[in-house]
Image (tube, rainbow, N blue to C red; front, side, top):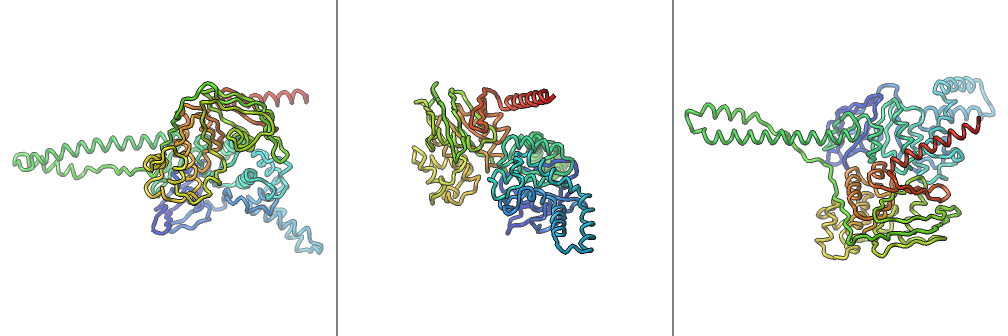
Length: 543
């Protein structure tokens, strides 16, 4: 069990948290949610002891071990992958290293022998002999192949490092597990594995995530941060959303009835207070009026952008023909004879773990990269807007947000451009902020503004939900569902893919394409059945 007791945190004059009291108990998984800037990551740092409170404290059941997901992807570059995972249990790793140092001594003394015996006993009690196999199981589950288990962390790419650090947090069955955006940079297979791990995890989990499907799968409770307070709800994310909306509705209805009663009493008092025969009744109603108190209806700190993609031109029947596209990068064939044709109703999700292949295909289709072989042809009625995975160059300038967006608008009127920025929550003085200093989420909202103002009838989006909060993801999701044109996109957000796509394409290792007209859930179900058939066939061959 871990609890926050009267926790207050002030940053300058602003109170990020004020007298927070909340208890997280064993056997439950808590989803910590709130708008960007509400303090989700900060609260996890308070719980983990990385950040001191202004007032109050955090208590943990004596003897329990807390583990959290490290955010510094370069912290362990000097260590092997296996060591990095086992460091998740600091005491076990200390024992292993002390043992190695003692046994490496040339002048092994009696004292060394006694100390080694003590360490061996503690090592056995902590299941140290299974440490490497347990770590390997976590790594394999997250998609880190066995041949990478003993290489240096510095040799891994960013996505692989994230997976190793997640394995580190999960290692050794911690009593309390704190996870800040654990699904970021994970492929869908790794996310599915993590979901199953957490569903079967019997201790306390507190997780921050913008993945609604993930929260629905793993959470038993939702802890909602709003206005420096944390309100606890039993149930998953969808249950929280319905409950919170119902609560607001009930409070509004109750206030409406109270306001009607107040008006009725005020009219009676105004009409009869000077009437001697009615004075007692008027006095009674005054007392009744004084007792009526409206429920405080503070507007939520959550803000939803308005995302609406409106094509300037209706798309024709000929959309895109791709014939035999191939591309090799650094000696690796990422696209191999890719062929497909798009129709005017297609909403295509590119899924699977081959991140480079998806990005390469999008760049080729946008004319930013040449294929080694093959051709592609866009229909004459098509116009395209592109959301790149890496937008660094887009913002490497000293333009203000308003000037940056104006350069992409056919209509140069400032009011027109600022209207698009306003929809994306850039209000007032935000328009003169330099794009170079924007946060990740602000840059994404700028790119979405650019796509909206383009009036394109084909949208290509490469991981658009990265850096967005839950509200912006929901708004983007709804905007794409309503969009009447063609969409090609890649995303790790299960609900985003399931509710948007009507066609699934997967570029498998080696660069070949699997193309199915189906929903994402149906695709996963068929894929799982195919895997089971393959296992069954292999078992039959072994027999």
